[in-house]
Length: 390
Ligand code: SDX
Image (cartoon, rainbow, N blue to C red; front, side, top):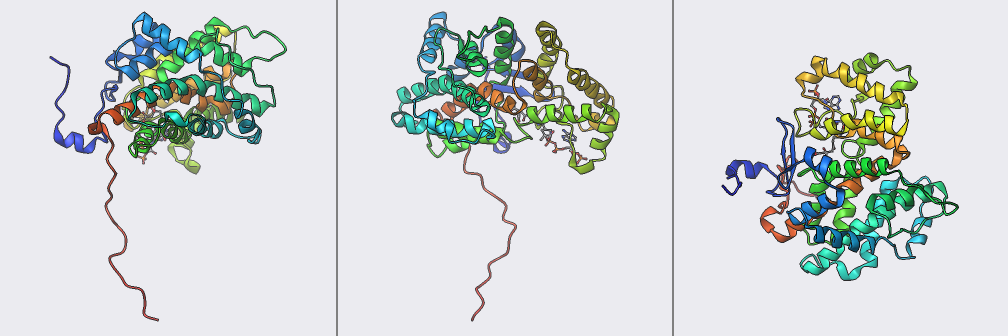
């Protein structure tokens, strides 16, 4: 009646940890944040409301949400010292390298927020990260273009402010398209948490040494960057562009994948947990066509992606291996339509995943039973031997 399940001890030993934040049923394609189905949250909620839900375990009251929003708006401004931080990176720097370094640098600017066992410090650090990471991401983009950095505008909502800092210029007013805000807010919700994935496990493991939330999130950003994980959304777009530039022969590409030519994979397909369609991919796929029509964008890569999915899901190679589209397969087409450069896609994933990292880190700090223990190994090296006598 409490909704708790009794885990078979064997399962807990194979699971990396117990957690009450997110539930996934990989075979049934189910994803719930604190019990709420992702489809309902994507349709009815907002990113900040979902962030509160993940972190605090319950949907916020209207007053709690208003205060949370206000606290974040008041903290979006970076210390001016960050200007030389951004100036120090080459314009070719990948946004994920700037984002990871920026998250870590926050620990230097907020040395009073490093104690993981002081609830007030953890609450403040949580809000600081949610407020400042979008500013760091937007500035990474602006610095790469050699364009001036726009200060955050606290009269704007979370996503509007991020879009304005990313695409706005001091020479004129940036009109934020409400449709674009709605789409990006929904995409952030879909990325907000996903149980013990690579980057979240990284955040937990780093945090298990009682390292600060800033250091733990910085490490999580580094893990997310990998093309087998969050970096897949960039790799999917690059894959689609390669197929398109090679003449768009989807079947020829699929054959290359099946023959494992040059280790090529169908990026955006497959998942360590989902052996069925990733429920997030279903939501994104449904939205993609509508988004492009709303924005008046025609992108042949969307048709190519849909053809690729159709050919792959009709092919035993993929069906037998239970390889279906995952969250990264269609998101890149939308990000591109919204005007983001391909190398910033994974930074968008990080902004979406941030509340999940924070929620899971706090759960681990507050409940040692959910800590990932120090991993052990099976030793496969040399047995004892001795240094040769001279
Ligand atoms: C994310 O964990 C999470 O929750 C992550 C995430 C989140 O929200 O945090 O959901 C986000 O990271 C999604 C995944 C994004 N990555 C990609 O799209 C990269 C492409 N996918 C693969 O690299 C792969 O599918 C993984 C890494 C995602 C999952 O690998 P698995 O399930 O461990 O599969 P495997 O590596 O054991 O491969 C099993 C078989 C192999 O073939 P055989 O040796 O049996 O012949 O399936 C093949 C693999 O070669 N295979 C693929 C494939 N993925 C697996 N073949 C072609 N294309 C692919 N994408």
